[in-house]
Image 1 (tube, rainbow, N blue to C red):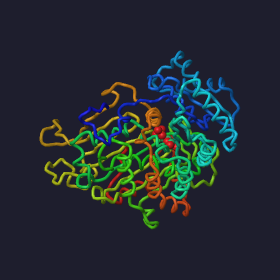
Image 2 (cartoon, helix red, strand yellow; image 1 turned 135 degrees about the horizontal axis):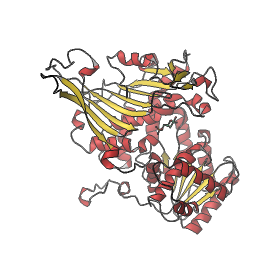
Image 3 (cartoon, rainbow, N blue to C red; image 1 turned 60 degrees about the vertical axis):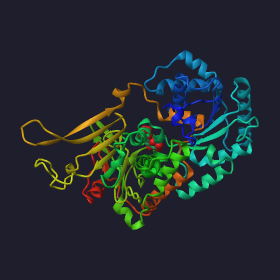
Image 4 (cartoon, rainbow, N blue to C red; image 1 turned 60 degrees about the horizontal axis):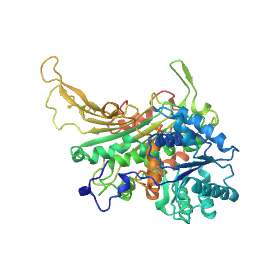
Length: 518
Ligand code: BG6
């Protein structure tokens, strides 16, 4: 996306368009964890492979485990080789890249540890010319976020005398409800200004989610239809075929509503429904997202059962495999009341969307992995053609369906009615117009973490969540969390490998709608 001089908006931030990363380091707290190995290091390596990182770029990892620089490098090499997707591993490049990788073991609650980090960063600055610019990445257990930032402040790591920048990326979850998100923020904001706090939501970094903005605001033909006059309802689905994959203990406390809807799916929904920003700059875009999140109707306790469905999978045999039920997973209590499936009907109380249901669902152990957004348009006002099932109130009577496919099989399809040439007469049949990323662009898509890390290094927070957005999305799910917390559910209520509990179908059926099978 190159900006031309005559299109320049005085408020537009040029870094969004030309990525110029100054010399810098990334310091990862919790570098022995899964996220570092599966996502962060492979993403940084890919950026190096694409020559997007500056000379002297360095990484400092840390955790409690005692490792030498060399042992840590070796560990990272193994995980990069394993987890870089669709890219070759270049051993020569790795050699150069690995020279900039360091490791400092230590205890997150020990002030001396932060002094050791400071010393390591100073040495790197001298040896590799990083200019004192540091991106701290908090990938620790969430309970440490506030105290790590406080230690960063107390040890003098939050500022650099030579004028280098210091930013902090904070992994999800940011709080576990509105009050804890506020409390976390108030502790962080005593150390760093909001402009240096990058709350990550990796869904916002997905190419296909970013493309929703391009699709809506880079074209003229869809936006006039993008409202309650033409849209009957919207379905957002994020289904996963995997179970909890060894994260039973975390997931038991979190549950699907917290793990996926409060953050990822509400951000996706905001991307689909927000107003056009006046220009493409970080606060302009985030103001619109925040405004939308604040417009979500807050459910009353007595409305929750009508608008939200909680599910948990039980054991099942799928194909040749015996799948465990959630309560049988390691680390999970046999009485767990956790939601491994959640479906919510949201409403957006503004002039564009009043009355349009947004059905949002997510679940583990669904029949397949798929994330998409299905926008169902209203039916034609008259059933002109006798074969058009418009007379009945069937879901087929609303033939226009726009599907934004987030993953896998990334693309966009528009379904509409067409005359079927077979058999003569005006017989109609739904057909599809398809756009597919793979065949249209043929290039590799950067991972969400590549995009987001590059953005944070460039100082661009457009795709990061701001405190007001985080709070608004907690507010939207909190009545549901509270009500579920106070209710005992008869679980399991769906079989592993199925599309979720029947109550979820009933929730849509009450409005004459039904879930699409993606
Ligand atoms: C994470 C959740 O944030 O997102 C996981 O904690 C979930 O439970 C994951 O599996 C899904 O991400 P993606 O990119 O694989 O759709």
